[in-house]
Every structure is written in structure tokens, then in C-alpha cells.
Length: 499
Ligand code: NAD
Image (tube, rainbow, N blue to C red):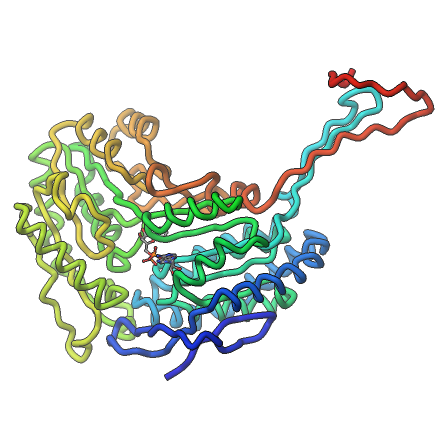
């Protein structure tokens, strides 16, 4: 049994709390490690050291900091297979999907190689006689990232890249279910030239998170996880005077118009609904076909595709479509929700509850499941299932389908499949969701845009990565400067225009 500790001041250190939680291999169902859960004292000590290291790091010129990102990017590429295997071993996703997890994080590091350009301020010369105004973006100090289990590489990289390249030190608290990747990434950053103490990986649970929220040195918290925890963290961080951006859960709908290419829509739904066992905040969990004819045809096209899906361990090779879910509790919860859908009257077209993988009987598997004729008052519609379960909610018209999306409390991602540009434009313009796909099921923006949902999918301000992240991790200072040229005015007590 391996013990996973923390990464503090450039070294692996064991936890001192005596508290641990088990880290599973979801593919086999076996415990593969224990991860230490930090105390308040351990967290506070890591922050104090980070604060010292941050002063020098912030004073390092931005281009030198960017070069650390360049070297880091190269090391991520070099270690791609090792990282992907590490992700799969603790998460359960397939190796090709795990490579994508690393890749979409790496792309944010690539943008951070250009951080000096993103950190530039603004300037106005001659804002008044002999007066110049300029602004600068300065690092906040020590910031924190708290990340979920479902993207063990990507989301920590989304947090580290912009925060560190802006000159901050960071306390990263990864998910206790998938802690190893963050520690390995921190080791790669050290190899890339990041000074010790600038990135501290502190493992833990609620006790550690609360210590982060109450620590007076930490200036900002970037959180990603479920909605109730996002809302809690946002409230407590803000009450303690911190900046907070907290990204939560989702219920993403895809509208399928009668004029859509139904083969392409069905392929997209299978990928977006069942990929990574549905454990993606951008998974499509609700298909909304418009018209009974479209709905019948869509379900008929989905069925053979779903029946062909192969579920299995990541070690079984590239022909496995998706792996297990994260824990046994999660598998049981998903199966319970499927049972509730049946009880509440939805048509269970494909039932994934009774899956068993030979040789991996203890793994946390749930097979692909499909519900038709789901209604909005059913638990399977109301809850974020976060498993391989797709619900079909039929609607008669485009306006009814659009209202369904607008009325849903979540607003992370959504998509429309149609052949009509006017309908697509109308949808993109009116829908109250942060990321919209047009004939594109998982519209995760590229790293030079930004990522963020609306409604209960995000609390706080500014999105993750892209220019928004550099605004979040820096504060603006504006300087008004006058250089006297021998003509000195008397002091003026009035607050006045600079003319
Ligand atoms: P989670 O909310 O259980 O955990 C996220 C983090 O919060 C972890 O680091 C965990 O240790 C910590 N945490 C858990 N309970 C806590 C508590 N009571 N108090 C303080 N901290 C606590 O989420 P998860 O199960 O790891 O991840 C899945 C969720 O994340 C899904 O809801 C998914 O939609 C969401 N997610 C959202 C995005 C996004 O960008 N919007 C991206 C990925 C995942």
C-alpha cells in the first residue's frame, strides 16, 4: 500500500495528521493507496512558506516566468503516456481519453507561455498637461485551487498555469480521489525551473478546504466541483474577503431539430453522453428531439450505437469505449437513480445496471443506459447523474425545446443540431448558457477563449483560462503621474478634471 503525502517546498512530505482516505483503482475496485488529509496547521505552514517564495517569483520578469511554462509544456509532452496512465489508474477513464485530459490542460499552459502579453497594462500619455496615466496588473500573492476528481490533469493545469505565470504562488488541493497527477505535475514544474514553495500541493478533504477558506494570506480561490460545494465555497471565501470563482455542476441539453443529420446527431450524443462514463461537466445528459418523428428516428438510431459500446478497464486497450465510474458509492447512486426513473414512469430503453466485466467483477462499472419520455419532474431529470445515462425529453416545437434549456437551473454547456443557420443563430443568441455548440456536442472552448457556465453552474466572476484567468489572478493598479517642468502650481483642494 502506497501512502501519498503532500508536495511542500519542492519535496514530497508525508502527512502528519494521521488522517487518510483510500484511493481506489476504479477498474479493479481495489484500494491502491492512501492519501494524507492535511490539518489546519499543515495548510497554514504551507501557505506561510508559499508567501515567502512568492515575493521573489513575482519579481522575476514575466518572460522568465513564461520560460518555465515553456519547459513545463515540453516536459508534459515528454511524459504524456506516464501522465495518461496515472490519470486512468486513479480515475478509470480510457487511455485515449486520459491523453485528452492531459492535452486540454497542456493547451492552457501553451497560452501561459504568452503570459507577458496578457499581463500588459494600459497607458495614456498626455491625459492632462504633463500627466500620464498607466495601469499595471500585479499578482495577488498566494492563491488557491481546489479541483474535482473528473479531470485529474486538465483542471489542475487550468489553475496552475494562469496563476503561476501571473506571478502568484498557489496552494493546490486536488481531489482526494485522484491526487497523484497533481503531485507529478508539481515535480515536472520543479524540473522546468519553478522555484520551490511557489506551488504547494496539499492533499485533503473538507477540513483542509475550510482551512484554505479561512486562511488570511490566501487572496483568491479557484474552485471546480459540484454545485452545492461551489456555492458553499463561494460564500465562505467571499465572506472572508477573498476573490472566488467557483464552477459547479451541469445538466447539458442537446436540441435535435427535424432538419438535423440524425446519424451525426446520434454519433455526437453517444460520444457526449457516454464518453468518460458520463463523468464530464460538459457531458450531454439530456437529448431534446423536436417532434415525435424526430424523436422516434433518433431513438432508433441511438439503440444500435449504444448496444455496440464496450465498457471495460483502461488496461484492455483502445477498443474500450468507456471505463468505470469513480467509486462504488457513485455506481450505487447512479443505479438508484435509474431505478427511480423506472418508478417515476420514464421508458428505460437500455438498462446498464446489470453489467459485469469478466475478471473485473469488483470494478465500479455501470453500463450505458438510455431513457426515453423523461419528464422534468423526475429525479433523473432534476439531478446531475454524472454517469453513463442519457435521457430523451421530447418537445413539440423549437420554442418549447429552447424554453426547456432556458428554464433549467444549470447553464454550463448546450448544443443544437440543425441544418438551418437561422435557427442556430437564434439559439446561440437567446439561450442562457455559457458554452454553446452548433452541430458540436461538447463545446469546450479552446484555451485562448475562456471556459465557464451560467446560472447554478458557476458562482463568482470571470471564467477559467484565457484572458479572464489573467484578470482573476491579478489586480489592477492605476498610476497617475505628473513630472513638473519648472512651472509649479499652488496646491489645489478641488477634485477636478486633469485639464
Ligand atoms: P466535489 O464537489 O465532490 O469535490 C470537488 C472538490 O471539493 C474536491 O477537491 C473535494 O475534496 C472538495 N470537497 C468535497 N466536499 C467538500 C465539502 N463538503 N467542503 C469543502 N470541500 C469539499 O466534486 P467531484 O465529485 O470531485 O467532481 C464532480 C463535480 O464537478 C460534478 O458536479 C461536475 O459537474 C463538476 N465539474 C464542474 C466543472 C466546471 O468547470 N463547471 C468541471 C469539472 C467538474
